[in-house]
Length: 290
Image (cartoon, rainbow, N blue to C red; front, side):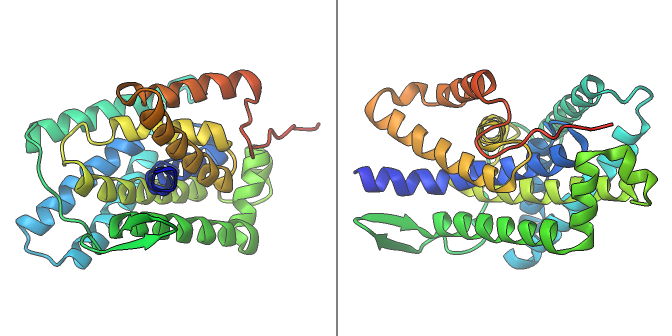
């Protein structure tokens, strides 16, 4: 049972880590907690459902088309809403992300209604393998595989490409990076696009396990935020570690203490980490020097 709880925690934590990774991407470049990415993922999951049921597309084509739409939605949100803010301080921008979140929630309820729907899994839904005395489903393997690929690709992006170097420069000092020729506005649009894609991937993996409804991403978004805070809001690897730790802790808490209150774990983690180590386990606070 211990092994099975651990494996299930890794699988669930991978979904939290995808959301945490999406938050880290935006926070690294803008210092904005992007609370709307969960609802962007939810809307894109409904669009995926429409492409499959109404458009008659294959799962692979619908999956690719949904990710493209999510990237465009992220760019549009940053360009048409956040960038037009008259007084773009942190509090105002954070409230704008929450307002956009509620607007998308209302849009989904108006367009698709509150009735739950079943979204087919992308692939590997009926596959399972034994591992160390436990069982891992195909959906779990897919979640871990997507998360691992995303972390590896982002590490390569940040450490081995000019775009990554520009992103790291902007993270340390946005104004100085712009004065030195870095096109910071384009970088910000890119990070919102990548964040939306990751959030949509998480939604497309969560919906087949639960049900597709407007409130699909409310709980996972909180868990993803807790994972990002735990691992460090500036660390992609920290997002992975934080997601896995949260998933494992939740499973053990539900099995041995109280299953009805396992969601409390995420809120306790947020409070404890912010009190003891605000930068997270692997995060770093950058000091600006004059």
